[in-house]
Image 1 (cartoon, helix red, strand yellow):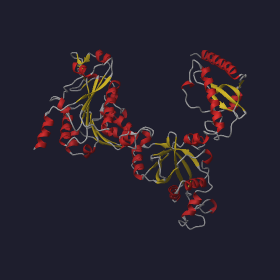
Image 2 (tube, rainbow, N blue to C red):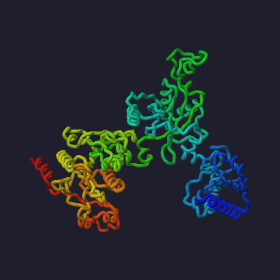
Image 3 (cartoon, one colour):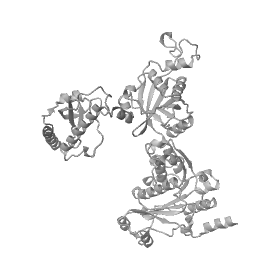
Image 4 (cartoon, helix red, strand yellow):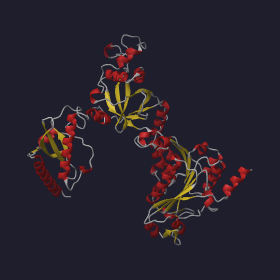
Length: 611
């Protein structure tokens, strides 16, 4: 929209709003000048405002400002309370008086900005009335603890990374400093794992003690610690565990001390941090004054109680937020019940190409605790168009490169690689196969799948194996789970690995591979978008297996849009049509059985068991 038209729209909406305010309130709204807007809201970019007197239930008249920025009416107005108590006396009132209202579906309607403004004004009046009544004051301060702590903090705390479980009891935890970060974990092992994965750190990971204090309810703003003595008093009020945790931290020979405070708000547990100076980096201070913590005592002989009291003395503290990076938060913000279960699962992904690698990425993002990647091949330039890895990994082994990438991006997970093929993994009795809760085969190689199937049957099908493949042009995708009962993968494959169920029949030549200008180099030019639907289906099937291991083998099929299949010279096969009553225009996913037929592989195992 041209600037002139935009300006005209703004003026028209502003005049209409002013007229409606006059009609609804019975008074003429006071227009706020540019200088008044700057004086009241210096850090905001309001360009228009109106001040309205409102008589509240306590008999006092207070003024509410309605303010708009240059994008009004596309962006709704805000409201502010002029006569208000000191900051952090009332919740939902920012330092400059702007009122924070809960989201409302009627809050934005560019075609009817006047009604929106009227709705916001009415809600603002109701909020002030609730604040005057006082019932919501402590409740909302506690339920939105993190918000109000951040308002009064000395920094956002992005550099404080927490890996701990934010739950009782209070305890001593471990702290690593480096790379401009302070990483806090339950123990040395968890911190070391995170740091090494995240930064490919090879040097020794040295940690010191930090304290985690758990409070049964969050503090009010008036209770936020201001100095070291307040932290010590808070710890003592929370019980012996908290007191002992800060005592332990005070005993550390550290330049600065870190104390985390956890409490549960409306949306779950929250974490904040407090930082204060520890021991001086020198044995004496300027002018020969003895170290303030050991003054009056021989070096190393300061009684613990004296040391604690002096450490948590009258010195000021620095309060900040905390960035949670524990698994429960990363995978569901602490609200996904599946996280704990998945964190204890192990998968092996055989084949890290355009199907296996994306599935590994999906399951890492879902929070699977241990991922073992198997692939003997290197990444080429022709691969990266359909692969999650890019140019920086070309000429690297796919499994190793995927391990580096996933471990760095999800440092709380355990990721391993094997840069050889599945037959080598089987031949060396690699324990990863037997320990896996799920094995995923996405090699596109019948030889590899055949070998894995034989191993799986011979070892009693202790855990499921998921085989995934695509049909021509990625117009259909298949996932077969071989579980304890029913068919193995060979039950419905011929001698060269062609399945007896295909979803799409192709006109002559339509499914043919193209050939690179090199002997034996064949391919089909479909892209990652078409493949993503299949990979998502296989990822969901893998997740199903991990969360509730199936007892019976089954087959899941995904079909692309009917129009795409037809444009490429294909049509839904008769066998597939018999399985799906209402395909419509697609895409579609459906499940089918995978029964045993007593194939050679199943028969061999039954014969050997009988013998």
